[in-house]
Image (cartoon, rainbow, N blue to C red):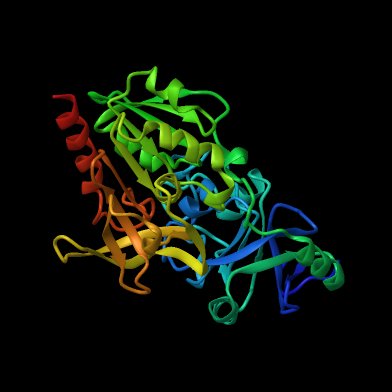
Length: 364
């Protein structure tokens, strides 16, 4: 097998439009990995990104050039395993240095069966994705023609129920806070559970759990989690949320926000290249305050499709999209971004206290 400089095998990334990028193979030994290629702008937190179940079906490109500097540790995992299809980096650190590190990023990828490609001109790739939008691609040590065929055969995330692939198969409990919350696992992150556990004892249930089974648990609140893919393909979750509206306080994040929007009769649409990063400015409409937020989504709730019961509470200052909403008449609110910030800034963690206040006021 031919190799580039060093011991790593030569590898190639081919996008569905025929664009070719040469690099070297890292991570698991996989001849072809395919998925929807997106980019993320975080400067750190690569492990949290790669283990976030919301990246199921996607290949993650890091725009920051040096990745893997501080290694990985199991305590920073956001999911039970990495669900992404692959990782693209400019420069993978050959040595890591951090007192918390248990292994290198390369070793973590191998342990999770995830392949990657390094040495890629990620600036060129990011510019291409910004101009044309996220698109299917394939990379690996296979021939260029085989990779192009794999990219063309890749379905992407539109219309695919990826939630069913990442949700928990059985209910489980997390934390021991004073309130009682049932959390739908559409691809829930560990940092979200940690934040919720500060205010509640959380029972996590599978994504397909009907509303009557949730209400039978007598929760003081229901949380709608983040997750991967197209909200239009998760109709069973939308139906469950409709059965919960007005019965119990609801708080949704990311995909949970989109599913709540659809349960209220709104529509969702796909953004050109999504929002993936830890530095997105969002304005809180009531106060005018700007929060720097962590984001990871490809789809958005169309604010114009929502009826008079719903008020938009947060707006993305980069493109004006809907980043949060509250439902008048019932106790329900949601945000498109990630207030738990794993990784990312903590400007928006107040929303978990807001959820606690909503549950407490409803219980009194």
